[in-house]
Image 1 (cartoon, rainbow, N blue to C red):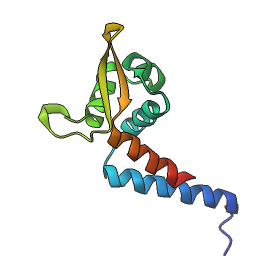
Image 2: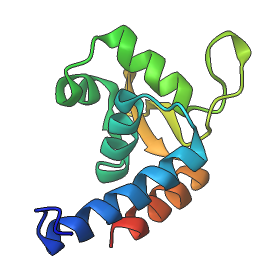
Image 3: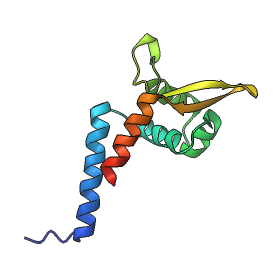
Image 4: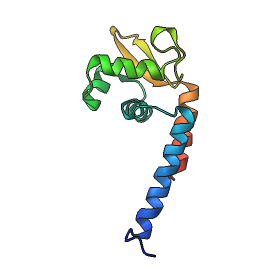
Length: 116
C-alpha cells in the first residue's frame, strides 16, 4: 500500500518521532514553549532572557515560567528539569544570561543525535 508520502519524507518523520521520544524521556508533558526555549539556549549559549522573549514572542512571565521548569528548582520549590540555568551577567547585573547545565548539554545532544 502506498501512503502517498515520499520515502525521504517518511525518513524525516521517523527521525522527528525519535526526537519526540527522547524529549518524552525527559518530561512526558513538556510544553512546546519550554522545548523551544531549551533549543534556543542550546543554539545560543549565553542568550539573555530579553533575547529569549524577543525570539519566542512570549511574555516575560511566560518566559520566566518556562525557564523555571528548565531550571534546577521549579516554582514553589518543586524540582525542575535541571537543563538550563539563568545567571546574572557580570558585565550588567540587571541582565540575566541563560546557558545549559551539564545535564542539559547531554540531553540536547541525545535529541540532536536522534535526528541525524
